[in-house]
Length: 273
Image 1 (cartoon, rainbow, N blue to C red):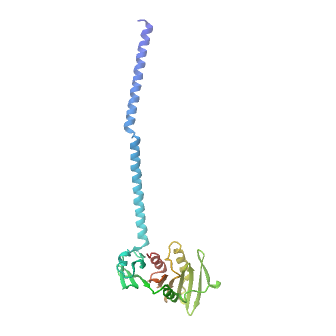
Image 2 (cartoon, one colour):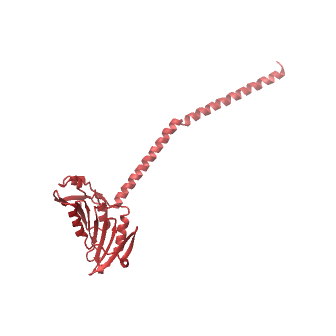
Image 3 (cartoon, rainbow, N blue to C red):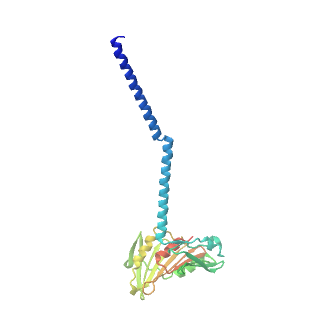
């Protein structure tokens, strides 16, 4: 063997060993990567699991928020069907409130029950009266309309500019005083609203009216046949209130009475089903 060949042979052998070592390292690296990196299918499963967990967390959060909202509003809901089934009037025309402004449970008590009229009183579990609701069936729509006209008579203040107050949302209220009383009224669609109090009590009738108008921007009263009426009366002192709400639907007149504040009365009336 020549000197030149003896030099080349060790050199080629060394190169072969280096190449083999590199290939082995690359294979080991790839194997390690395959063991530590999940497959695309596994990635999708894990991602889906994370999405489901996040979705569950959002759902739980929304549920907690809803419970918080219900608790904060202080509203008690009553299933009306069980009461309705006990009433003798034709089931298709029976209406009852379903939402009441109190955190206590509300218990209904039937006080009048015939084929032409019913009255249900609602009170809390501690015995506090919340409202009384009634429905009356007349011989005709004309008779029902006559009963409504009698109730509304004298409750609307004439529309004169001197007593006008802007209540917002394109609605104007009008006030006037007479015989030691002050009256304030306005119209919203087919509904007449009237507030009365003693002049000496200096009640902020326009302020009360504005709150009622604002509430009804997001809550809808029942649709009356011709007209409906909301009478709010503050007896002497202005610390108590009596609200009487009535409306006609064909040959029927429905009525809600309460000593709660006007917004509470509207809440119960807008929940009638």
